[in-house]
Amino acid sequence: MPTCSPTSANSCAPATTSTRPAASRDALILVRVNHFDLLLVGPALTASPTKLHAFHAASAKYPVIELGTGFLTDDVGAAGASLLEEIEAVLSSKLAKRQITPR
Image (cartoon, rainbow, N blue to C red; front, side, top):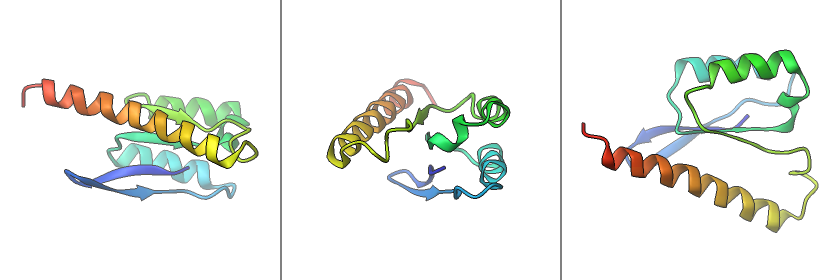
């Protein structure tokens, strides 16, 4: 599960877990101990209702983009463009809220 953790005001460093069996546990730990602007979730997580429920409970305060089962088999250009549009929409919305919110 790739995620993005801010390292400064203008950049971010991805935090990822693999597709190995313990990856969902690792992802839950990352979500609980870090702050993220966005979470990307692969299709493997949705295969287990128990893992999916635990993930949704831990990630409730973050926007989540779920990569569908066809993400890896869809046309690369179309899938990538669609994902970038979703990411841009989520991050633009978050940025707009931050600029409006008094600090």
